[in-house]
Length: 204
Image (tube, rainbow, N blue to C red; front, side, top):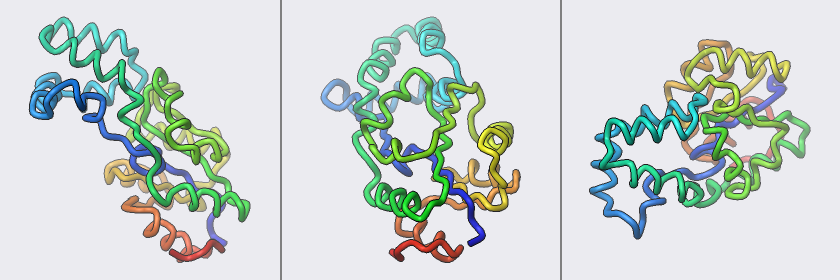
């Protein structure tokens, strides 16, 4: 085999994530979209992933968009609803990799303050050797430093480590650091990619 380890992103790879779900039954979708657009939710969320405290992000929203602060609070209060369960088919793949003795790890962009919700939503996360959480180390993908930290912390040879993520920029950044980076589309396609690399797991 040419693979020593497989590193999974978590959101929409092992666990489903939909930031609109906490608002279902509480706000109209159009209003949520307007709020996300006005406060630039992707940028705020990336800051949280990179270690920014929720209290600081909330203070910024309150200062700049006071009319949106209550809606932002809804997202935080009901965050667990944003991760409604596992990605179908991912847990059997993780189990197959563990069974054959391949190291299986996680690398996720996730706030340290909400990461405790991850494993209850997708028990496969508990099967991983460990998870490097961006919010805990203050660096978020696609920053190349987090891939260097991944390699050094877990003594990985990037060339013999498959990294999979549903974000093309993250995959490109991992590839630039020497990882065997694979864009995740679904568990069956990833399984096929791993079989092609010689891993003795059942084909899709």
